[in-house]
Amino acid sequence: MSPLALISVSDKTNIIDFSKVLVKEFGYKILSSGGTAKHLEEAKIPVIKVSEFTNSPEILEGRVKTLHPRIHGGILAKRSNKIHLNDIENHNIDLIDLVVVNLYPFQKKIEANCSWEEAIENIDIGGPSMIRSAAKNHQDVSVLVDYNQYDQFIDELRKGSLLSSYKTELALKAFEHTASYDAAISNWIAKEKKLESNIHIRTFPFLRNLRYGENPHQKATWYGLNDMGWNAAKQLQGKELSYNNLLDLESALSTVLEFDYEQKQNPPQQINAAVILKHNNPCGAALANSPSDAFRKALDCDSTSAFGGIVAFNNNVDFKAAELLANIFLECVVAPSFDKEALEILNKKKNLRLLKLNKENIKVDNKSTFKSILGGILEQENDNKIDPENEWSFVTQMRPSTEEFNDLKFAWKICKHVKSNAIVIAKDLTTIGIGAGQMNRVGAAKIALDSSKDKSNSAVLASDGFFPFSDSVKIANKFGIKSIIQPGGSVRDKESIDMCNKFGISMIFTNRRHFLH
Image 1 (cartoon, rainbow, N blue to C red):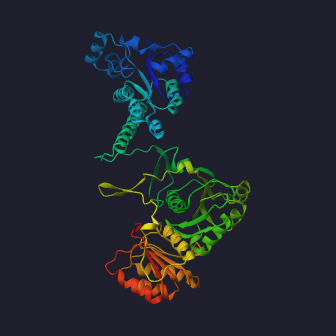
Image 2 (cartoon, one colour):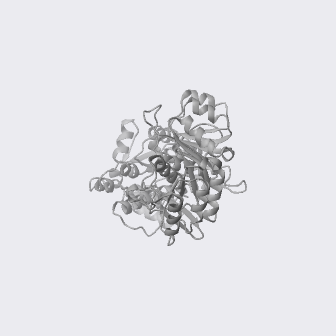
Image 3 (cartoon, rainbow, N blue to C red):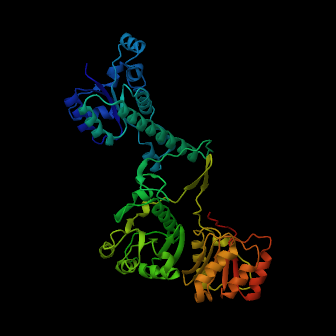
């Protein structure tokens, strides 16, 4: 008896060639319906219609086609079970040996902002049922859910009988496919109707194994989306990305995104931002009229820490910027685009990883962050909302000048991406000192101010948390700081305000903190 394959695919990539091999080389008969059947018939491939096979018409505008005992009996029957085989014979059911199904494109529909009704109609019912039936009975039935599996399946057929271990692998992929599909639907309903989900449901397909994690003895794996984020970035050159590279790239990009992200060459009035990052902390950042000036100014902040760091630009990398980049050892550079001449210069540094990441591959809205803890996962909204300046309070007698106010806004944006306790010293839209990850705020201030050296005179200071004591203000004054921005909210705020008034320092309360642990 000829083997029977049930084929019903939304993504019809390579299905014609695959079906021809099944029919001509292995004698399969093809069972299909709807658009897939029509597609195969147009390619002159013999097809048995599902409605003819079940002796039941498609009903409810195609909602019910394959939900029938002759379909699921043919898939679920255990070939070694006499009761099953008797039922198959008594009900005149043909055994189905192969199920090739991929599902209605629900994810693509909702990404296109379709209506609720249209999205609901793109929830596949029969497809997941057939996939799950075949996967459950995988010792007797093979199941394919991705056109990338077709070639290997043909190769395995050519070897003779399919190995049990191979069929189990197919079953795993099948259940992963339906799990991901159900997760997408559940998450969409919760989001659309603003409902609170009682379980954590997120699915990300396997992308690749990394060489190792933070340290060589730790295994690491990368899961993610093919069309979004770092996997959508085009790596133009350099070694394979590491676990630490990806973490640092994420931090560098999130910082530079504070200043928009374009893909234009020499645009008029474009703010060029450059951020240098090391071990998940910015060690230099600047705004300038050109990418080269922005990088040079950022590098001046802490050229020692920049060695072996990550650089992110918010605009096209030109020839002049590439010349500066080539003069220091760096791990990665990410930007929206690179000039041809810039690539020719940077190509000489073979191990330098260059990544081109388009703006459309970056999603910042409604994004969550996750941290694992013993026995669970913590989820929170991303801290990417714009701080409304109309909510800021000018709490001192002295008010910042226009230049100081611009520096304060810049420093506040950078401070948001520095590990707590965080202090950022800035002047002329450039960081000149950064204190990160200290156990107390005075310690962070000392590090930032000491590293700024004599540049801190008339500079500004940003703190990610309030000042519980006036000691930070005293240190700032000692180094010539003229303006301070901080969240406020301490019961002893008045001490800091009074100390600023004493020294003629202006201070702004943002009324919002940005701790980063």
